[in-house]
Length: 119
View 1: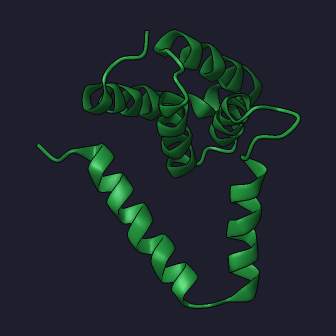
View 2: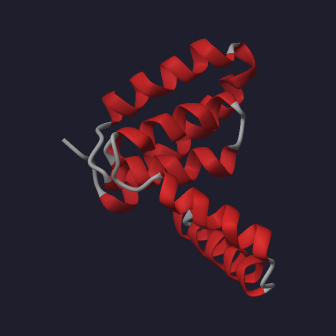
């Protein structure tokens, strides 16, 4: 069975390297802005991950949802906490996000299978 977490992480790293190595100043600045936006500030990194997750679900970006699911898991969120955040995203985004919600559930299970459950 293909490990979808490893596959996603490898693809993301490979393509990010290609983009950064192309040495486009605008793209580098966007990547830097993204990194710095999720650093500790008035809001802690953990809170920002849930904000990113909800926004990603509403915007229907599966890659973004996967990234923020993994980051939320690394920050120590439990499945119940993540599901509650996803429920807000589904409420705001409407029924059109349900297919993305399904994939989010599937990916969260894969993350927990790979890294263990947070209690």
